[in-house]
Image (cartoon, rainbow, N blue to C red):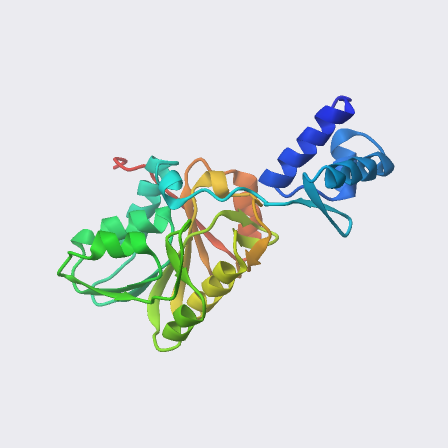
Length: 261
């Protein structure tokens, strides 16, 4: 990167902290082509100005990445989410018991399941509940708990206690970001803990994430993406990230666009 002024560099550091989490001194020093001491002075200034919070070896955004509401996210990557949802629905067999996470892509799967017959769906998300509430051929269980308004999903000890009484053939998880190194990213530690518990209760685990979420680190709460899970994304996904996930034992599926024969 060519040299830029200190103000522009600091603005860029804040932008990176709120979008990718790239805030270590060494990474920033290499990115901007300046010394580590210069970056430390930048971080000190940004901390004094109340724009960042210092951490060991770097800094983080005070509010991390502003979490978009479910309503805002519903219209993003709409066709990719439809393709992912259609593929996920095709895996489900009559008589199965499913667990659906909160989130817009899992909500799109719930919409696909409106024509399903003889299945049971348990969910932590209001979107899935709304999609399936009037479908007589689908038995619906709500896991309840504490409602997070932004994600329109239930979390907390009541949700976790309900999980202990059930097992599932398949679980479909949403996420705010996917990293081969760190796993799946969420805005809240309660969400990542819940996803881990949900995965333990199912025979098959799927993570539904359109391509723009791959390689993103918008927040600082993580759940592992272990060997044996399946990531379902769309056909615009970065091949390098997919290759790295595969080397770690994660199955990857590229869902074809809706309308593809």
